[in-house]
Image 1: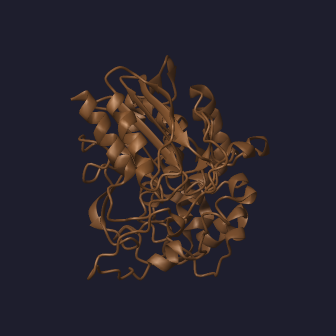
Image 2: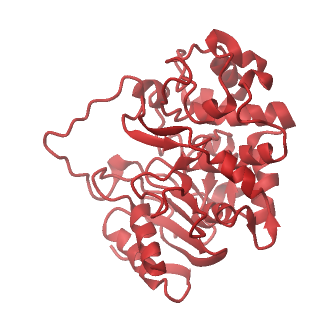
Amino acid sequence: MEVEIYGEVAPGFEPVKKVFADLWKEVEIGASFCAYHRGKKVVDIWGGYMDADMTRPWERDTLVNVYSTTKGLASLALAILYDEGKIDYDEKVVAYWPEFGAEGKQDVTVAQLVSHQAGLCGVDTKLEVEDLYDWEKMVNLLAAQKPWWPPGTAAGYHAVTWGYFPGELIRRITGKTLGQYFREKVAEPLGADFHIGLPDAEMSRVATMNGPNRARKKPRVTAGTDMQMPKLYPVALLNPSISPFRHASSTEWRRAEIAAANGQGNARGIATAYAALSMGGELDGTRIISERAIREATKLEVDRQTDLVIGRPMRRARGFMLNTEGAYGPNPDAFGHAGAGGSTGYADMENQVAIGYAMNQMQADLEASPRSLLLSNALYDCLA
């Protein structure tokens, strides 16, 4: 399948556009990719379609659900709160949220909470997707929940529950929701087209999601592959089970603030936020955060421990993921977050690089190289 690629590519970065176009030879439906270098936008491209039937062209300002890529942007909001002196990563969560201390969680620090070490990857209560839209219900359930492991002794991916933690801390301290705080502190100052809690007026811009099972090319199955699921995987990711089309493409999902999983954005919006971080907190004369606060937010908290939920070694900072196996380029100190299905955003302060990638066809073949990695590698090849 061939599609026309729109947008702009700076001289010397044409190979990135070629790699992007080649993605439609596989499973891509619609996507955008954006990259900054030294604070300047060098790639800003998009193509394809907003729907699986390929009837609505992907436009310059098309938005899409980016799942856990949202966590990186929410982590930035929390880091700004730290920069303002209103929260301390080393302080106990109960200093801001007293009810959180139930069931032996009284000593959990903010740093442990946002680095997936609190043992709250899920709740005992059976949930429906609609429960995720009820903020009070979710934060009360999490405050009352007994940890699934002793906090601070291990890490396990808090796939959906994570977003309620920075969100409730920001709400307790500022009186604003995380989405409001992010809009005021990041999106509006930078002009970054990214939303946590989408206004109704923007709904028509959002592409629908297409799950891996509905991809144009079916995944390869390797004989002998060990598909054993870690015992906490269902706790974190199947209570509730979230359908890409039925749930994550609904108006209710887009309107809610599920800051671990339902940010609506495009590659340009993601890359713009990370571009500021790649430049020490300032982009085009607008400073949103100090370099000192970025360093604090990206301190290593979990170093290649096998994750109890996803079963792989991970490197985690205070909300941000730290570069592992070159996923975020050649700099081991690069940081960001990826989302289910393939969306990604990250910053590399050493090389002053930032990227964003967003798409509506979730990765179908888990053995194939992630599309964001192909694009990232092409970008760094152009810088070599």
